[in-house]
Image (cartoon, rainbow, N blue to C red; front, side):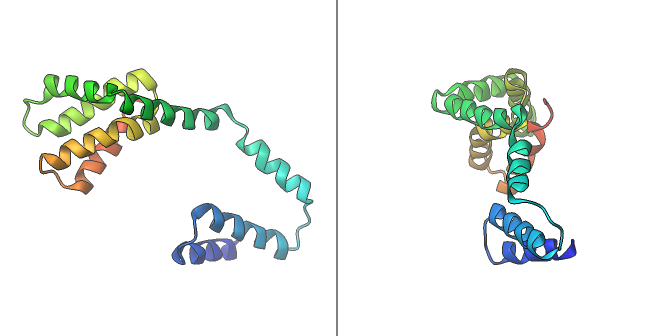
Length: 147
């Protein structure tokens, strides 16, 4: 089992994509562990584990967030939140949290919140002089409040 993690981390440090590193280390485990498992069983387990309505919903939430970005709905939500709490000291941090709460009420997905409002929020916070890492941290933290 330790060889799986070592092989996976070696591939990560070499710059291989995560999916490739995980897949390669698991293939080596199946080949060299001595455990017998048919190839049809492996593919069946992969397909059954990804056959989930929850996993299917995630890309559609991200699509909805992108559509809301393109139609400027996220800009309006951000403007509304800025009108509500923008006057408070540390305003854009509060605006970020308020906008995320509004968006969470509409979508219920932290991932959609981050991919939708995150672009608008981080851009506005950087323009106002906030550090990029701080902006990303506030956005990530506020995205998980609602769901």
